[in-house]
Length: 488
Image (cartoon, rainbow, N blue to C red):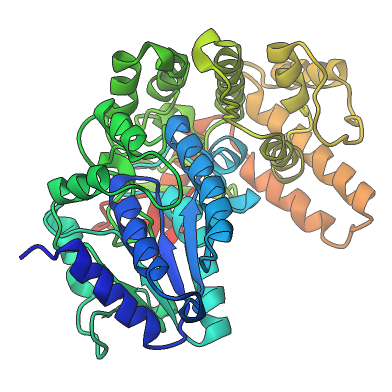
């Protein structure tokens, strides 16, 4: 039976006053989390100021690759929330969480070369959503001994979500459930609207004024602009359903064949036409059928044999460069669009570009240092990131090296592998000189030689077939993960 708003607010007040455990409310900006937070706000507002002693931390995780319409809506809502919480003497503290620079989508996809996420290789969820949320929740719970996590999850949305909610049951405390994440064992889960339907949520939102000052009618209009009816939840563990089937997820999501929500927004609203280049980028360059775009070696340079062929690893340098170039072109198109109004949309930040540049030059030995070159080609202005030392070898020097390697191949290949070996050997030597760390130089040089000891993929595959290299067990069906480790 559906709980009435007054009954839910009464339960919220009773639970709020029962102890000193701080609350954390997951807020995505969608209808369910908005209704949940609205009930909590109104319930606490009905208490005397002297009773409002327990902090309520509102957390919203911005993956930095969200649908920008929703990201801006949530950002504006958090700003308004902060101002009105102060004005109303409410112990509510909004927090916009973002992934660390090492976990961000473009740093991993374009920088490290991780293949686009797919159902059995969903490397993005942990990095973009779970880690930022869990870090905040864990730190707060450890500082206070316990914490209560309030989520806007509802039963009946899907069988998968119902299964997740069932796992939360079994509490020794009234109205609270255990958290399924063992690292958050002292974090209790509270689901105020778990027995509401979607219609119940909308009825409440359109009939009750929002207490922190946003217009719920605007939220309703956002939902009208896209289908189907769902939202991207706060994710705290891997059992939580992916945002791929939701209305409000990452615009780069490859968990589904099409981003129907963004496509519907573009079709239904002329003022959102500026998002079309983003949709085109996602459709044209983030395919999961990408084996030929990836190196035949794993990330560490080793070989992995499976089903009589090599398991391909990270994206090749050429494709990573193409991805960056096309992403920056998309950024320029979006920024130049007349119908973007006052929105300031950054698809990739300078901080992320600097980290991608560092990975390419230092970790991958790609001393061509082409991030500034690509940036200047697209925007026609000087690269604004961190200044690095000029490349030890000029573009003409590297071109000469490439030509010599091609000539030495003597018809057995195009010389690209020989060039990569020579370039990476030079990169290892230059890096040891700059850092004054030469003790492991010989080991690094040996690693480079072993990684590039093949003329081409066919040569490497023949070696793997006839020599002792790591081979996945015959019963393995997913070559992307083994014993919980990413194989790229």
